[in-house]
Length: 487
Image (cartoon, rainbow, N blue to C red; front, side):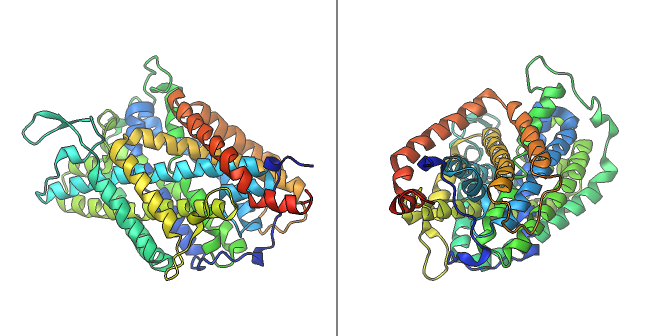
């Protein structure tokens, strides 16, 4: 008999489950959500931090490395999304291919990833909000724009300790209220915001290109300072790890399977379409940004695009870009918060988390309890934790999810060889999944020991929760027990 925590779920036919959620996503809306989540804080904020602290102008290479590794994982996501459309996300794929204990690990990891990711996005957004309002002579007290005890410069020039990141906290609750109003309304608004964001990026590239200074690319790969991760090759790899913050959008798209029309066809299109679009945007945009602003000036800058716009002295364009980016953060938070609620809902449906997390509002058919808890937790993190720390935690969570998804493709090729697959990874069961595991694993190894310690601590807490609650309440285990242990 299989140990309870190694049991796997049956691969269900696509039409076999009805979650109660409204199916409002088509292929273009999925791509819009993927692009909306991926083209956000990773592009508008962490590009500067990664360049200034880790890779210099070679952060462009870091984005290419991240895109290549993500493409292997994206292909694996596409196969599993077409094969297991009813569950969605790396959690569901691990449950079907690798067993309940691995599914728990990745589900618990995704809860951290999405919550911390939403906090990082909201933290970044507050910097752009403050910059935009400052252009209109509306000054937010600097002590309300950074985590507690951070040194900030007051308007009169003296230094003080910050209190909390208030605008970011407020933004999280506004987006949560929007999601609780109903998914269809939120999706329509998100698609509009993504369109505005893409137009802003195109406009920014056009107006900034004439101001690119080739001297800003020298040295392209700054010499290592003697510390791992601070420039040189190790810095490029450390920045690639941070760049994976961007590609959380791949998993976010997969979590919307239960909200998607014809998911077997549309999920692979949404995943691969958003991945390709975002990879091109990141490489082009980072090249222009670092050509305009010296990377040394961006090491602690949460709003590098605002800095670039101020440098080219086009006030009217700067205002438009800052408005577009500020509203663009809505689409990022939309994807992260909806992904978090769906993960919590799926785990609660499986009995691994308390059932109130799967409770749907009668009027809007949204998991309102999960939304409220996520918003409150993310708000605390936004107000109290630095953005670089939040970005690194999101990235390592994303990488772990990618590794498990790649392993899941290989496992399911042997466990369920006859299951229908609307998309199949080329090269057999080993080539692409193994490349994905290796490439993502290398990037994970390059991340800081402190980031690894935080991840291990979170997983340790997760194991305590699983063995105290999840393993006893698991529907898969209880159903198996009733049937005499035969799945």
